[in-house]
Image (cartoon, rainbow, N blue to C red):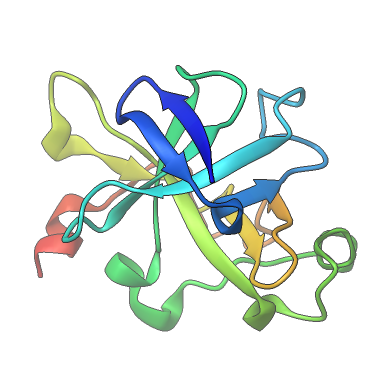
Length: 147
């Protein structure tokens, strides 16, 4: 185990099983290649996608099935699947990035257009652009989580 410094969670003991390599980084952060997926608490639906190099770079993510049910399936190109070293999405965990306004957390939204895929076995991560034009970048989620 190694020690990971984070701005939000402080120092965290990190097992390599939680590490994911993003060959292309995340959108807007192409130089950041290594991220850890960290829990926010036992009963929280949210996770942290934390850079292993910058303590102050982390993204709140959530499993979209928690507020979309099984209806959310991002459109993924064959190139993205190849880069993920998978045959189909069933070999990946799917997360979406959550934006939480500091002054109005009840207005949090999820980006269904740019999901983060994690290869379940090879610890490869990739953020993609969904090929489904119905997927939006700011989908309100708080009311859907409460139901």
